[in-house]
Length: 101
Image (cartoon, one colour):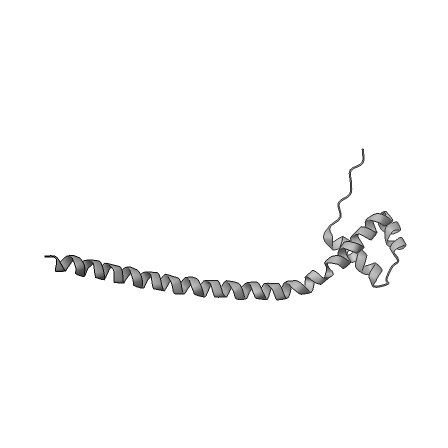
């Protein structure tokens, strides 16, 4: 039983780019690398379908970084508020117990 060949993503991308760029035809690429036309067509379809993700990730990463910065600011503010409330609580409890004597 033959093992299936595994191709690196870089190889797949280069093969598709060679065909899209007009350097080689799909048939030439398939012959040269002993690929079936169906496999190459699947690689090309996946490449073209996922191409918009390359440009979308920059915007989404920027949005994610902005969201992280906002959350970090909120955590800092809440931490400061909590410390202030703890101090106020200890002051109020110590003065209330001192008045009873």
